[in-house]
Image (tube, rainbow, N blue to C red; front, side):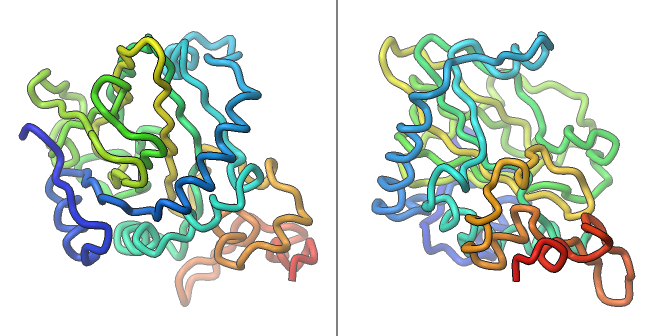
Length: 282
């Protein structure tokens, strides 16, 4: 395979799921409107100006994974009202419903993270997002997370388009490493999104330009009974959360997790009440 399959922004959910089952990743062209991209990008450029490149962590593994000339930050719901529209995108929620709900009563946001790759950045190590919950990421297991990498600026190979190994989601041995010929670049126009599963090998590409910054936004969802990557409730103002749609509040961790009907499991409570009840968000 020389490139990832592209589908139209209005493609049926069944078509997207079919490609995901086979390749582990699919590019949905023009998933976001130009108006939404412009609004979100403007807010992210303002936020990005306040961040330096690289990590402040003392952990060398974190620093290596982060990148020396890459800016990363979260708390996107607090930094742009446009993020809520992206978080609630029906195509993304449709994919998450199909892939995650068989193993949980509900899911929540794993992280919404800007990944802004600067000139001269090296290739990121290929990885599977589901390895955040390593004991569960098995060829015979079930999906624990689904993601979308949004191109906020055009993704080309030169500026560090995400590299993907199509079909790696179906490998019988997740410890196997791909050949260079197995890796393809997710080149796409701004406003498009690469939806991929937690089992697909991927990683940021190298930015070989001397002046261009690649603006990408990673948004992912995770099973509701797992700990997400981002502590999103800690990065949101309570008064602002009250104004968000109920579905957005739930995805951002401002609701209790309730299991499927007939199961009394309740997680993420305050005074053993649902979050919105105990904190008066209703």
